[in-house]
Amino acid sequence: MDEFFMNLAYQLALTVDGQTSPNPPVGSVITKNGRVIGIGAHLKAGTEHAEIHALKSSVESVNNATIYVTLEPCSHFGKTPPCANAIIEAGITRVVVGAVDPNPKVSGDGIKVLRENGIQVDMCTLEDRIERLYQPFTQFILKQEPFVLVKSAITLDGKIASSSGQSKWISSSTSRELAHRLRNKCDAILVGIGTIIADNPSLTTRLHGGGKNPLRVVIDRNLRIPLESKVIQDTERSNTLVVTDIRVEDRKIQQLNSLGVQTIQFDFGEEEWLVKLLKSLAARGIIRLLVEGGQHITTLFFDKQRVNEIHLFMAPKLIGGKDSYSIIGGEGISIIDSAIRIVDMNIEQCEEDLYIRGTPVWI
Image 1 (cartoon, one colour):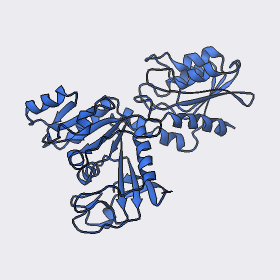
Image 2 (spheres, helix red, strand yellow):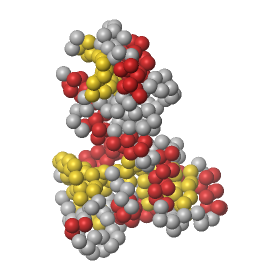
Image 3 (tube, rainbow, N blue to C red):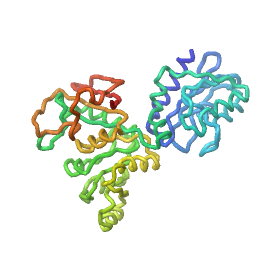
Image 4 (tube, helix red, strand yellow):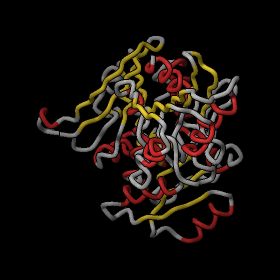
């Protein structure tokens, strides 16, 4: 029975996944005598947590009830009061937790407070589903870096563009809609200047009924970005952050800043500039970063081993040609045993395409 009700809480958390940054998505269900009497989810950072929504939505007294929550109830004062205290005061006698808070500063404290007040606390992890749900948040907390997803449309022979650079459209319209759903879950989307110059994308989320527009991050070492670019001109729907070198002229920086575009500078000659960028994005509350760049940008993230998930839309097409573009460039590997392995694979049909998701593992 615990798994059934925890799964309801998990499904509630999925409905807000990507909408609560820099907080994690959390779902909660209250039951009494085997019946659901209240449900809730954390809707947005700074607003009430899932447990509070569930308590307020309850259709009868929660005294002696059980509450299921996908993440350990908080025990500290933040932008909202501690949920553990609210649970104690409400008279709930049992709490079922899906995952312990990964933050070492507070991990286990909520459970400890509940037990010290005579409340039974049990775990129900739904095998590894809840752990996977919180992987981005866990990385954000422990490594202070965003969880990086690389997304690309590729052909059967692994090409992302023809020799002329053309890539529209490799994947189907259904695949492109799924790609926008992926954007809707992410806090920032990153491309290189080559993509901006070649395609002039808006990098917004286009879904029926709207969607969340992530922060647009453009890697532009020499600040070549055209001022008429959509990411420069359209600042109403989403903010743009241009990442450039410390040697760029101040005049160019000031020009972009005057147009409402944010800029950040790194020494591109320094080995760790990408890591510094990721740390900077995490400091802005970016939990998930979606990389949609071309070959150069994708290769950069793979070379630095900074890819947590890969999302490929593989179309039943062949481009061929030594001058066409593969998803990863560079020198590549010389020994097959050293190849990057993709584990935890999930493959599904998407119109005529295959949607492939997995986790890269470096040997």
